[in-house]
Image 1: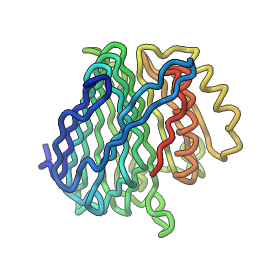
Image 2: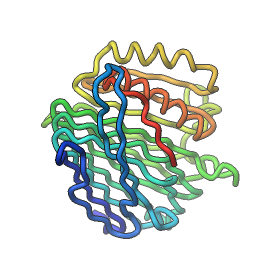
Image 3: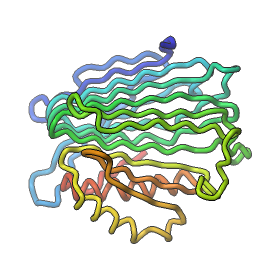
Image 4: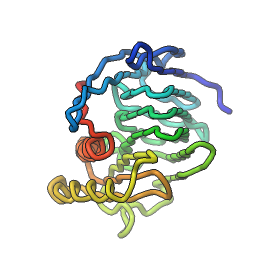
Length: 284
């Protein structure tokens, strides 16, 4: 295990009827910068649903060669949290074979809701990153998580000049592994522009939704919604059910802001169909 160079541990629980940050630990350069209170309106006319917004911050220029970040977030029963960060995650060039690593562990207990919508990931020229995310869900829990991958600093001509990107994700429902992803991109050894591969696209985004309340009707309503914008946004969009309790939306395009916009639309539609909540308007 690499030496930890930045760490966040946070625990949330319902106290006096509202979600509160009950424990936090951070090690520089990572820190929890701010928490905010949201009151979500419902489509059913019920009382607004409270939710805590949390901002994470990286005080450094980004992940340097040899850095290892640990992020551990736990939501106790019934807690509702929107989690994000303040800016792009920037990965700097690797020194030889030594790249950067990041491990995220998200624990969501019964009837809790975690919405984790970070800013995009940008891999600089010669960068090498291994990223691993583990999600642990209890019955009744819901987790919505997004990621957007940029090919580099495009204004400098850094398009697919990073060395390697490995993205591994596991989702557990109780003791059962219900989703596993192991993605590895090595631009110098892959024909990413070939037909059937990335072709003309340069950016990749995903929205992951896991809940034991998900079903075919949620996918159908989402696809009907996405078909209205498909072609207008000049991106490629797809969505499908996972093996169990999940939906994944994938978007490819040429600009990070395009992907973020489309994924936000999908996120807000799933908030409506799954949670009966109006869109969460987040200012940054």
